Image 1 (cartoon, rainbow, N blue to C red):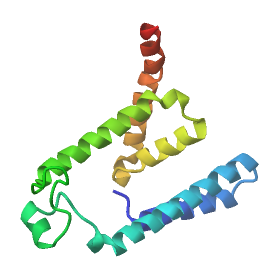
Image 2 (image 1 turned 30 degrees about the vertical axis):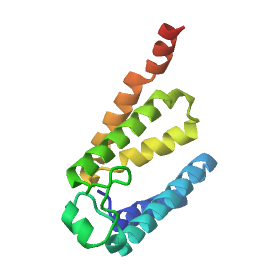
Image 3 (image 1 turned 90 degrees about the horizontal axis):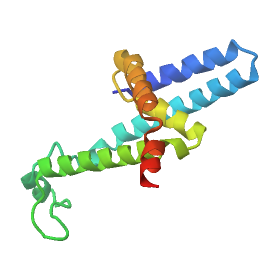
Length: 155
């Protein structure tokens, strides 16, 4: 996972690259990258500064949650939450959101597609970033017409 210092280093690289070009589209691209990496660094700083104020479902068991007087019960049933069940539920939610994005990928504006790709590609460890970006690119390429094909069968 990226750390704030790594995002700042990437922002500095973008700033340096921006100084070394006169092509307006490249200047714009490097400026956007610099701002994005700077914002990501600020987000990481905020997360680090507020870590102790967050609920960590995978780190706490239901007794810890209850003893800390946190939202430790299912609002509907009123039973203690199981940390593994919460983590499994959150994983399912993320999978569903990811699948929904892929299903709508062809309707998402190109700029947002690029931002989603860049963000997803930067979520891995720094040495594996290039490999992850390649895997994501291949996946998107292999599934780019899936929505269109599915729509053809429904008609």
